[in-house]
Image (cartoon, rainbow, N blue to C red; front, side):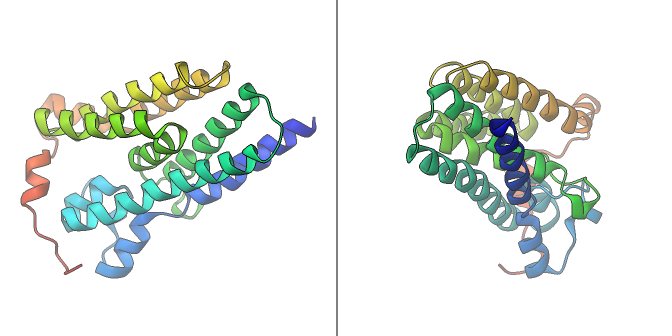
Length: 215
């Protein structure tokens, strides 16, 4: 029971960290609420669509950092104790899931935030920086090659599965990665439909857009 309580508290704290949105910084600097423009979500991709790639990069950096900081910070604390590898990996993945859940469903945005891609990158870099970096490079390469970010995102999650299978121990990392992938599919369902209809914003278009406000 004690372990269960700690896990619930861990998820709640991680959720709170995930609620710290990079889009709020973009709104503060630009005066534009990206939740009401573009595809109407609070993620880095929509910041880039609405405000230009510099704002998108700013939001991405903040959201990547919060995912990395939450998991890396927990890893450091766990290293000070005597925990089994299975429990350690489970707690790290739970913390990562909490951050991503908080990003996607922040309470102050009526539980409608971003889509979690930048936060996933941060979590992956903290879990295994080599595989996390590989996933980021694949995301960039596939997105530029196909001209659609969502396809790169789906490839990114394949690397997340590798982390859950190879360095991680136990059943929970794999289960959590499957649930997060399912959530990513659900959050990107409109993007997938727009690709099918030929109306999805292309990566090249975002890079051509100039920032509406200097940053």
